[in-house]
Structure formats: structure tokens, C-alpha cells
Image (tube, rainbow, N blue to C red; front, side):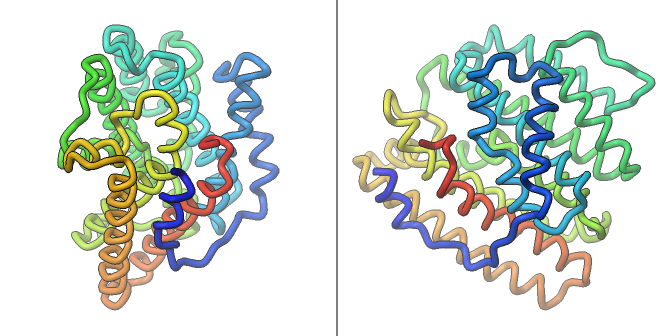
Amino acid sequence: MRDFAISALREPPFPTGRHGATDQVASESIEWASTFGLVDSGQRVRRLAGADAAGLAGRACPDGSVEGLRLLTDLISWLFVMDDACDEDGLGADPVRLGPAISTLLDVLDRCGDPDVAPPTVGPLGDALHDLCRRTRLHDHAGLLLRFVSQMREYLLALLWEAGNRERQRVPEMAEYVQLRRHIGGVHPCLTLTDLASTRPSGSVQRANPGLVALDLLAVDLVCWCNDLFSYGKESQADPDAHNLVTVIAQDSDADEVTALRGAAHRFNQGLATYLDAEETLRATGDDGIRDALAARRNWVRATYDWSVVAARYA
């Protein structure tokens, strides 16, 4: 089924790239995760290394600073560990357990990485999150710091929505799923740190451009839907995950699995066509800042596809 879904996808027509420091950053990020206790056993270290956060970051940010690539890789590693705790370790199916954990992490975010306001002892996930905020703050770009913190807050709150659905064995309706999937995917904060890694991060004028705001949503949808299609085979080995585009289409249309897979691929392909049209309009009318932002977003769409093809995480 996985191969069927992938063969129906249109390959993003964007150039591929890979940061020259990807391999160096891969080992450094695993060490960072181990230092903060995000991975505390050989098995968890191997699982995180196999997820290849640096491989994804290096493709998504092929031209950024090494420091920026390292920060992005560490964020992706953090998101992988958090997602594994929710999806595979049971935390995400129990809102009563997840709620206090989310509350603690929100408390960390409220400090915005201020080194003079140390968070309380909050465990590995909280300590590592504070470090990500602290390092983002060091870039002295207040707008991007606040954007990153806000997007991480939205990600955490969306996990509670996901947990409530799992507890009730509820599959969300399509419009609801599309909206909340943008947040549980964690793509928005990754885009922000990709912008931060750029030698010319976009300014507030470019980020407020309605065309770029709309394009951001399209890019995030494409990344999330691509992820859904590649991960569906693994997720459907037991009960299908309610938070997958294929599962939502199957319920929404009362479709069988093959039809739902075909429908999910069609939705991705249509979204890609819409993205290309919107990008062309912005490219023709925007300034250099807009064009740099467009390059970052097409890199993320292409990187997600290429990384997913080889990702051990979906095996």
C-alpha cells in the first residue's frame, strides 16, 4: 500500500540540495539530545539517529549557516522525541497525563529563552526546549523569536486536541483535520528557524504579505500530507491512526483503503499545483526578501519528499 500511495504522488519540481555540514551536525545533535536526556538508552539513541533529523534539516536548509542548521536539527530532534512519546509511548492517548506535561512546557515557552529567568526543573523535554528558545534568542531577532515561541505553543496545544481524539477513538472531519494538522506537524516553527538560519531572513513587511501568508499554509499542508502518505503504511499496521489524511478521507467519503490513498495523493497533487501558481505570482511581484522566503519554502517541500523516500522512521 505504501508503494501504491507514493507512486501516485507528483514529485515536487524543485531542485535538491544538502548542506555541506549535515553529517557533522547529525552527530552533534545526537550528542545534544543525549546531554539533555531526551534519549536515555542505546535503543532510543539508535531510534533517533535512524530518524535522521539532520538529513531532513540539511535538505531543507542547504545554504544556511552551520549554527542555524544545528539549531534547526536540534528542533527536529526534539519534535521527533516528543512525537514518539505521544505516538508510541502512550502519552498522546491520555489527556490526563499529557495535560500537566504540556502545562510545564508552556511555562518554559513563556520565558522566551531568557537566560536570567531560569525555568524550574522540568525534565529533559522542558530543559531542551528552554535551550532551543535560548539559542533562538541569541540571534537577536525579536520578531522571529516571538514567532517561534507562538508556533511552538500552538503545536503543544494541538497535541491536546489529538489526545482527546485518541481517547475517544474519534476521527476528525476534513476541515478540522486540515486546520489542526498544520499545527501538530510542527512545520511552522521549523520554517521560522529555517528563516533564522538564512543570511537574509525575511523582515516583518515580507512576512505580513498576504500572498506569503497564504503560501506558508500551502507549504505546510504539502509537508504534512506528504508525511501522512509516507507514514500511513507503518501507522496502519495496527489500527489506522485517526490523524492521517488517508484515514480522514476514508471516513469522510466512506471510501475503501485504496480509494482513500488515491484521494490523499490527489489532494497533495492538487495542492502542489496551487502552490506552484501562487509561488509564480509572488515571484513575479515580490522583492529579494520574498524570493528568499520562497526558496526556503520550496526547499522544505522538496526536502520532505526526498527525506521521506529513504526515511527509516517510516519503515
